[in-house]
Image (cartoon, rainbow, N blue to C red; front, top):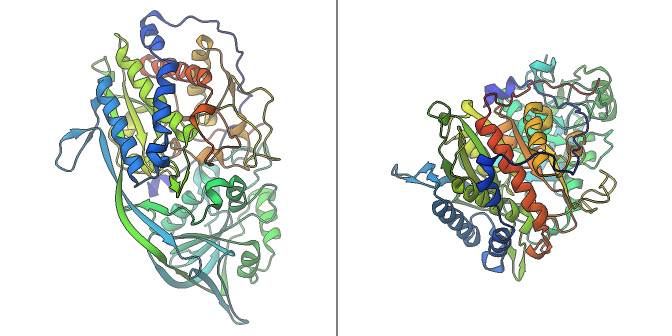
Length: 552
């Protein structure tokens, strides 16, 4: 994916508001009706009562409760009649794709970053340095400032133009340029694929960097990433903190750490411009301000108090397509099965996040297999591992696909499809919440495939949800790259995240099954069923738009 990332040519369209009328104006096609009517609210209640129960102890990745959930999903796929889509180490067909993981706990007391210049030396630890790496790290290297850390040929922008990052530590801003400008090449006011730290680190690695240090934009009009995370409370502030996890064979081989504003100022003291001036100069006309900091040598020390290996599993079952020619093409319906586990007597039940998506995928598997007529293209039902630890199962499958990505035509991803959106600490002052969200579904990703969007809107005429695209036009919450559709978007696959929004129970122990709006969840699955039929049967497939513009 390194070459693909260097060639990314993406921005996010500022599309017209995606709001659909609530009235149902189209009948369900007769050939699809048996499966449509197989989607039962009673199933969702029973299944989610189990998946979010105390018995599964919050489904922490690499813990017995999550392993039990994996076995339940596989059993339900088998009962539904899906074909096993994975193979085990001996080559036998099964429903489980092994995802090798490393679990580690960074040492906040020991981890440090140090700066040495001709004026002297300084060193910082937590809370001025945040993050860690799956391996222990001790390195010293020259420092280079690389703006927003973006190389985007299709957008005519490259922070690395004119600077050599090979063998150096790279300092970059969070997010991306001009994000308050609706006409920006970088998707207007929404996030693009370049806004995430992982993509910045992969780009830096491709340029030969040995580590990435991330600083919040000094002129930001939103919380920094760490400030956003701390707004959640719940899991974010629990003691001891949740362990970190990473793919054992991750393509990202260099560490990423985040530093405070004060540390960033010290690191950039020899840049000839203040951090605010550097950001303003880039944002003014997209002229990179990258530079080697010749008098700066940085040392990075990262160690872990615990480091273990384990495996989790993506659960995957296939409904083979009915058309001999089109059966080789794939539509993915996905969710993730893990959550944040337990801490003593406290259990993070994760009913909405993401028990709702897990049981939704299972219910759709039953619906499609119950329908006598099958779509022409194949449907791959997947419930991913370790999403809460960094979309790890989805990144693994994107790197080790069970079906060719080149012929994967669309992806519908469920992550939190069970609640009414409500004001919370996560969103306060950052995004407006409509007064009535009892029938509202947020769709995330429309800029990358208007065709996909059109198919969902058309299918909704048989369901009558209110469809909302607010999260495609905001940049404070980083929503676009926070769920399992994102690794597939990096591979140019039209992929949407179906999401009912944040609420005060998000990542708290109070995210429990009795708070789910099962009637709305049923309608969301009905919409997903009809949309997947369109992707599976229509002659034309959704196009992926590599450079959707901002608003004109």
